[in-house]
Length: 130
Image (cartoon, rainbow, N blue to C red; front, side, top):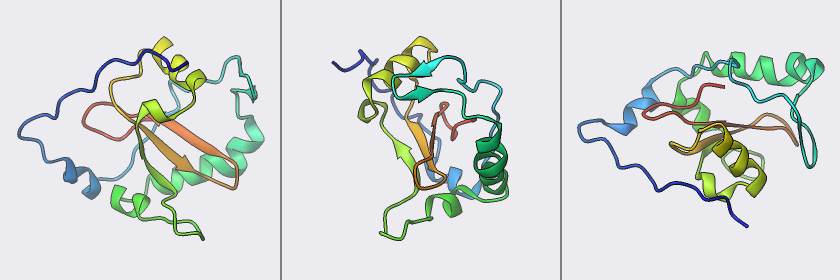
């Protein structure tokens, strides 16, 4: 059963959405959802994962423009980092976003390794803070 997501917001008139691609990525883990667990495992990624994979990747992304981040492709040619509609993620994640009121836009998917994917709720008019 899909979570009951609110309708899509309208595009703001007078704002050029392509401007984001000329901006540097910024992030914060101030609102990271690390308490409790998912049905498939703990929400807390652990210090070893943060120090070894997540932190260094996000620190590197902060030095890059959004167009550089979005141009990264896997060996198979798929975009590694991209915006995703909330309604395509699993029901459990949709529900969690609803609980936190983070459904005012798409999410952004960062693939950081073979199995590690960080997903963040995008804020209106900007890419997400992590």
